Image (tube, rainbow, N blue to C red):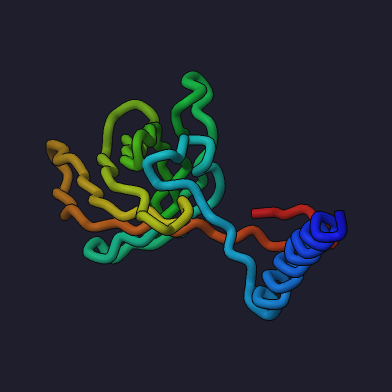
Length: 162
């Protein structure tokens, strides 16, 4: 019986020592929070304000993504870059990001096709912006694009704002 009691005490003592050791090893090191794979993200995971960069076109600005008013699993976007404002509608599926941009709310102006960057936790999207040729208007050159999620600033009430 003494041997059995000794074995139980030894096992219990070992179990208590393991968490203490792990806790000591992690002190000073920031906790790493795993994020979803880009292919697992849904439209709702992209809601918020994004920094827009179109390097070849020389444009930069902001995109606000939200739920599409008619299609629950789709995106609605509001662009502001340069002196331009426009709206967009689109989807994200298996890490692929697609928006159709309109400057007048009726006709298609440009396609945004890209991918959520692996390891970015849904905070960076890269791809290609392709404006459509319009009769009687100068043709704009296509450009790579980069979207980076703007971080929410902490507010005194503990919430966040964009």
